Image (cartoon, rainbow, N blue to C red; front, side):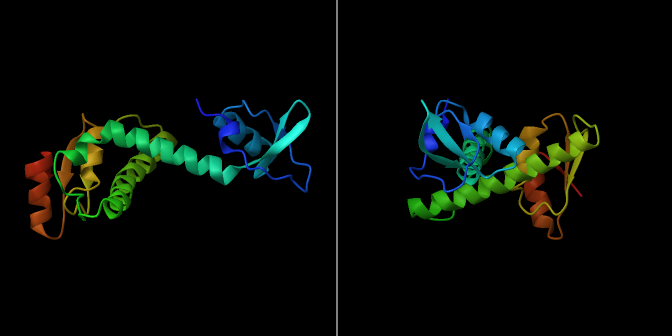
Length: 171
C-alpha cells in the first residue's frame, strides 16, 4: 500500500496546514483534506515537519492507479483486436492507449454513478448511440455482461461492425 511518504514534497509550508503521518494511506490523506477543506497537508513525524503533500498529486495518482487496474481487468477488450493501435512509435502509442482506455473507463464510471443515483444496479438493455465502431461499447459489454446490447450509428458500417465483433444487435 502506498503511503503519504511516497508523495512528500520537501517544502516548508508558510501556513499552518493540518498535519498527517508519513505512514498514512493516500485515502486517509485525501479524506483528511476533504474533511478539513484544504488542498495540502503538512507531513509530520516526531514533531518535525518533513514537507507537504498536495491533493492534486494524490488524486492524480489514485486516478492513474484506478485506470491501470481497470485497464488490466478490462484489458482483454481492446487486446482482442487492434482497433486502438494508431502508431508504431511506442511513446505515441502509450499516449493513445491512455486516451483510448480512458474514454471507455470514464464512460463506465459515469454510467455506474448515474445508476447509483437512481437506485439501479444492473441494466438489462443498453443502447449505444452513436456507437461508432464500438470503442465504448466494448467496455459496456465487459462491465455489464448480462445486458442485451444494441448498436446504432448513422453509418451502418459502425453498427454492422459492432454486431459482428461485439455481438450487439444493429439498429
